[in-house]
Amino acid sequence: MNAVIKLSSMGDIIHSLVVLPFFKEKIDFIVDDSFKGILEKNPYINKIIPVKLRAAKKERILFFKEFIHFKEMYYDKVYDLQGLFKSAFFAKLATENLIGYKNPREKIASLFYNKKIKSEKFYAIERYLELFGIEADLKKHPKLLFYKEKDFKILSKSQKNIVFIIGGSWECKKLSINKWIELANSLKNENVIIPYANENEKKEALKIQQNTKNIQIINLNLNDLKALISKADLLIGNDTGPSFIAWANNINNIILYGCTFNNKIIENKFSKSIEVQKEIKKGLMVMDKIEIKNILKKIDEF
Image (cartoon, rainbow, N blue to C red; front, side):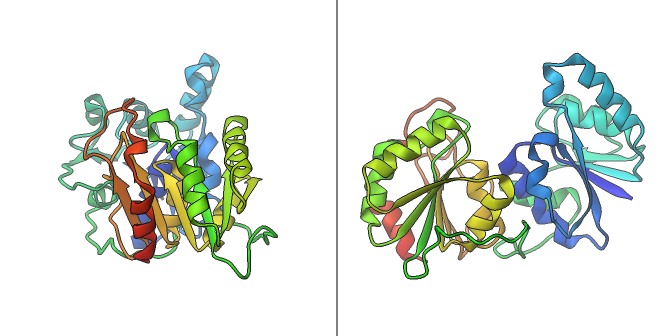
């Protein structure tokens, strides 16, 4: 049995799923426990192996428990899609044949690899396939995320259902509330839904709702978030994990990039992007340079 290890984050895990349909056999997927929900119900995966390496940063006892956990595993091969010291170190405990990048994100990780593949591709999804020696047309792919079916009363049968993803791990990734309000009011004839994951996102969603007439907000678990987005007509979102659920399931989407840029997915008939710059400058607050008229132009391209 073989395995891949991709611990985090949600968006990166989603991007890495592009490799799964190309395997002849199901494979185990080692992932941080906090993100295991994104992989549930996936028919390409033999077994999800949740680990708690993120939590182990704060609790030393967890580090030793995970050390034992990995020592008890055995795989013929493990492919390290993370490229970090922690992913390589722990994965090496579970196999005698660890495969990774010659130029990983953290150079020290390469010391643990038995086979090293030099990555020369630009987009993340290309680099993931590169590790397995797979070449494919990445402008199209099958559905990559799966979920338990759910009916949503908030979905309209007469209007287009548009999901806004307003959150982001960095503030500089987030379009301002005023811009979301302007965009929602420009889509006043559509049914706009804002899912939220925490109290801060809820406050922001409520403020948008209070200044518009076509916004519904909803708190969802990960399964239901996958289900809702997969039933939508369009997603517009910041460069953050939930936004890429639409890309994974071939739902029309527009990703907004400010202090980051699109080095992740290849645009296709479902996926469009708006970028402010072509490099990453964490902390640079430039998202409000995105003009709503340009987002509306992207919508018209679908």
